[in-house]
Length: 281
Ligand code: KIV
Image (cartoon, rainbow, N blue to C red; front, side, top):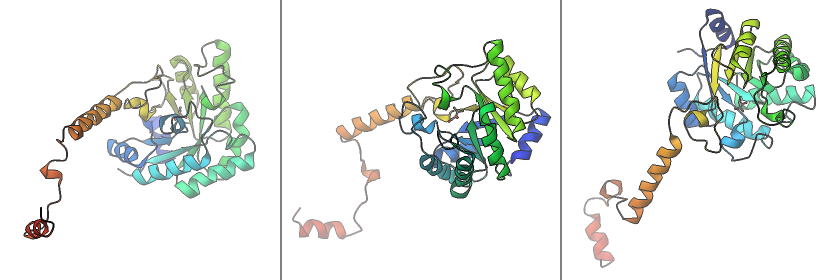
């Protein structure tokens, strides 16, 4: 399958074909995702929780995001990869935003960058787009500013909040973003935004009426155990399967069932006798 690029995602929206999207943080997961035929991968700052065990995304740095994006790029060379701009990599100035977005392209060869916020980050989106970089906006529940939102709460559940979501979506598109991610908003608001915008509107907890779906891979494979958002569907139980395998390994080692003959390197023909004679075994 040839690698899909931004114009392909626009064409998929036109045709009503859903875009498939997952996060990935490492080389093997990126390989699995490419083999499974995912259209897009996000190297999300959720790696702070899913990989490093932080309580949230705030401590995540550009260097961490670049290192993980680089690994994902190598694991999925034929898949559209998006680098997620961590907290304070774009908030303070447009120059800083362009520089950090540029680092993602130069050091990890990503295809696009994502940043959180609507009306208030529109100038940053414009600056990055003007530097020739493809941008995905991200509105609704924006975890980096969850303090201001009163926690990790769904947005757009009142008319006033839904109006703000629509205004943010329009501002992101107007600023030149070529895709947008809608997080944790009611499906009727998600569907309205997807219909209203000309750019693909991807959903993570924004309902089936959007142009495609994103899940955090660690949730989707049952690896992340601290909490599970309502919008998650678990497709396997990695935590259970791996813990069970590790318990069996512990039992085998303690009972000297591992290693067995098959796992050993034997001495070359005739060498064992010489070895035993020399060491009087
Ligand atoms: O970092 C991430 O994975 C994200 C999702 C929560 C949308 O931004």
